[in-house]
Every structure is written in structure tokens, then in C-alpha cells.
Length: 274
Image (cartoon, rainbow, N blue to C red; front, top):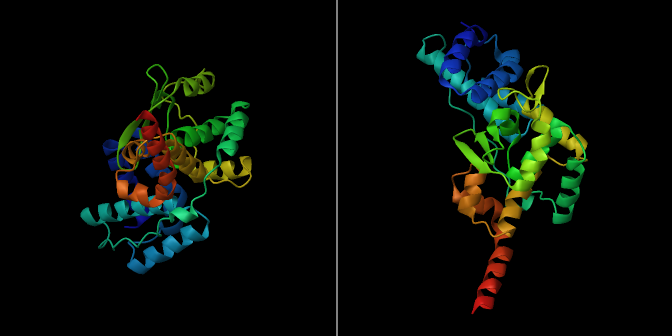
């Protein structure tokens, strides 16, 4: 049996076990990246996986997308092994190293203000996606999985289904005012950002971000959100909860160089109280 022939059985199993947004993401990744490349293979070797990974990277996909696609493929291979349809699933190839703090691109406060003003002038739902990345720290994949019912404006939360766990991000009054008019006329089950009747694939949102913002990557908006949180006095543990990152060490490694200024401000406030 080939991976392509196994796919319908795997897909139906996932439909029953995953939340709808996660299921849609799995299907998109499988049909866009996996089946066209390896659907005719009867299993894969470790070398096949490394070649497949290199092909994804050659397309210019960001490391997070490559990681997600490989995760879906490994899930399919292990499923095929368990069902006796495919051979032994090889070990997953190593992922690219995470960027160092010095490699992070972060918007200045002035750039962020100008961007917020610009996004507020339009009615594009893709601009809403960029707004959520900048003001809630969402990743492109999380934004593309959002349905209107996940934007709970009555209670002031965004319900996010992440890779490892779900989380609720509180919305400010200003954010609710921004989102409210764009939510009018949409059904709760509809995806917030879609293309051709399907949820938009994250890479298209990333490409839109670069066109719209003159080369700025959407992950820069997420990093800027984290840095603004630090600068406003939010601790790393709380930022981790907002970003869906459980490791405080990982956050410290990534954003640690932005902490000293905040600590200095805290010390100054403390001394003023004495």
C-alpha cells in the first residue's frame, strides 16, 4: 500500500480524534505538501525523510511549517506501521536550530504604532490576521485555524488551538473595537481567513504579510508582541501562557536580552516607593 492509498483511512481516523481546526490543518499540510511529493511511496527510509525535508526547505517554507509537515508525515507513517500497511517508520530527522536572540527581528514602538494605524484603515480579513499576530502573538498556523466562534468578543477572549495545547488570550477593549466590525455577517463556524472556501494555508498568510509590510515576516509581529509585553512589565511565565510556550528557559533564551531594561525600570519604580 502506498502513502496515498493509506491517506483516506488515516484522514478518517484523524477526523474522529482531532478538533475541527486541528483536523483541517493536518489535511491541508498532507494534501499540499505530503501527497504530491511522496504519495506514491510504499513507506519511507531515513534518507527519504531527509530528502523530503530538504525539498520543503528548498521551497522557502519557514522552519515551523517544515516541522509541522514532518510531524504530520511521521504521524501517517506510524499509523501505517501500526495497521500493518507500511513498513517500519524511520526516525524523524533533526529540526533546524531555533534562532538566537541576536537573530530576532523586532519592530520599534514607532513602527508598531504606524502599522496598527495602517491595519486599522482597511477591511481585509488578512489584515485582521496580521493584527492578531501583532497584538495577541499568534502564529500564522494558529490564525489560519481560527473560526469566528473562537473570537469571543462578548467575554473578551480569543480561543487558540495550538500545536500542543489550547489557550485563551484576553482581549482589550481596543482590540474588541477593532475586531467587532469585521466580525459582522459571518457565521460562527466559518474560518476567519479563508481562500476558495477553505482555511487559508499559513504560507499564503506569511507571503501576504511580506507583501503588505514590505518584507516583514509575520513571526516578527509575534516577537514584537512578546517584547512589548516584557517592556510593559509582564513576566516570562505569563508571556509563555500568552504565546503557548511552556518552557520559561526557551523564552529566556529567545527574549532574555530584552529583560534587563525592564528590570532596571522595576528597580527604579521600587526605589521611588521607598
